[in-house]
Image 1: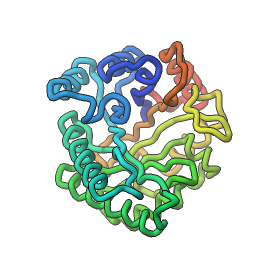
Image 2: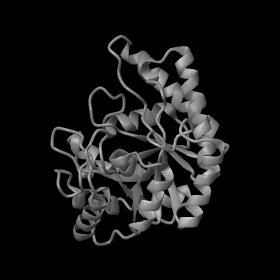
Image 3: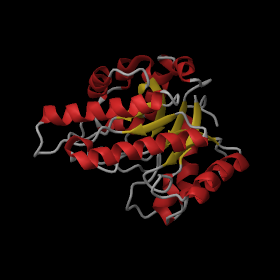
Image 4: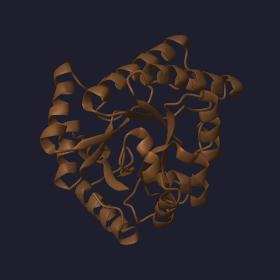
Length: 285
């Protein structure tokens, strides 16, 4: 496993552009990065010239982009037909952007339960949406990675619902991204990771208060980082990652929650690196 960095913290801290965020990640020693399409690297954020500049910046800094976070602009479970189609086109545009940057995986979640929509209907709409995006992505050799969100109002909120969604979507390029902090917030055990089998394409390291999603400095919350990373090793995620064309799995820091006041984001990253390398010295850049 290798350490990577999700670049959103610099945007959260001071509104940094994707280019500034990539420069900060490189300056801190990272080789692998996740681009944050929700904050500053989505199709809606970038002109045609800026889209080309992203690839040039990655190459100039010696960065390898591994994952692209890009959520649908509308809640899929309750979207109108027009919103549904708009979200589908947006994700397809994201797939094409990812390919142009050398990324072969996009991460998003299936959406939220809506009190005004029947739960079976919401689930069915999410399944169909994921299938359509997967079908668009498969010919472009892109994997679609779902991430669980650790609150009951999300359709996919734990590993059990991840397995169910994967079975219902039933596409070979529909896989899983796991977040160590989300596992803790949903009160699952590290041992439960085995239920996702060979479908783990990527991972995030986050840390939180026991009852609140905070994306704080890793090592200052209640996420059992060491135990969860050891379980990833136990299920041999590096060997399984070869299925996706990788030599080994990348585990990226996810720091900062929108609205946080972060005076020194670089120091947040440095402290998180120190903690992880103390409890999991096998995890290197």
